[in-house]
Image 1 (spheres, rainbow, N blue to C red):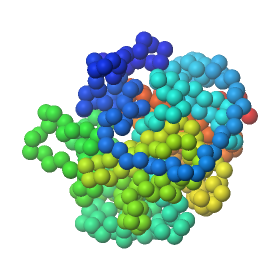
Image 2 (image 1 turned 90 degrees about the vertical axis):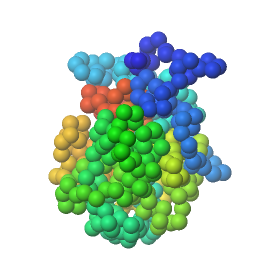
Image 3 (image 1 turned 135 degrees about the horizontal axis):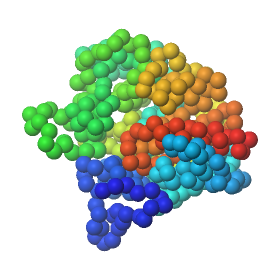
Length: 401
């Protein structure tokens, strides 16, 4: 079944009692099912709350700017409007903050300001933010070997890697991020995380990992020396999260709640998906509301009032482009990756949290701007969608300058 844009006739996914169109267990994250599923993860998978606590909500001011008709680059050739681009790129929620004021906020596809939305790999930047807080507290040492926190990994390819290596995804561990190959390491993550059952028609003698840590223990091959090159490996975030859990004696949802979510004035509790061993998936299982993702961006933009060390923010904005190559340069020609964030270029040093199917937090210090885009693309990755969105960010910045 084909997916549908917001301007297309709506497919009645999970509508009715009982519903007639129910997402298949193997394909809930694929089109068109993701258009419903990314706002309803708690109805699909086991989850753990990231409690917001009893603290006050950080009220965001409003100074609405009419950006719907703003001319922006279209997907492919030509120009369109911002409204047209949001439709073209299957947007569920879109937020623009200038300083701490909302200047543009739009919801589509049934989403509301209270709806939690799956962040995919934006979760990596959430996890990396809490890691930075723990480094500032002296709980974590970025130069320490991974095996200081996880001695079991001495028998894996992570032997000799440091915490900084996994923060920057520069370990030399072999890990395939091929989303279409069920036997790839990321394909195994789908099963180990509890997101998917064992794929049908696969080899019945193949041994599937029972949970995420078991998968990590199986990573015993090096493709290069630690530190030589950036290569996107989702599992690095999970290795980081297990180090955080061991160092603190707290599970990840509790850590994110107590060290971050209770301290930045969010409106709603968030949540993580859980694997069969109760581990919260650090690399992609985080869910929160549009505005609360915006508040996370403001934490970084404003220097955080001491919560996040200023030197951590500065270090994160200073990535090494020399070890950043294709295919990542297709969408960030001058980019880098540092501390679980993407660095746009070496001049503005804006940061991006990015997730498959079109999730994004963008932080631009020069323009004092945070943009959040939550989407349900029909494909995991789309270079045309990404390039058009990146161009729109700069058109928005100029329009509200």
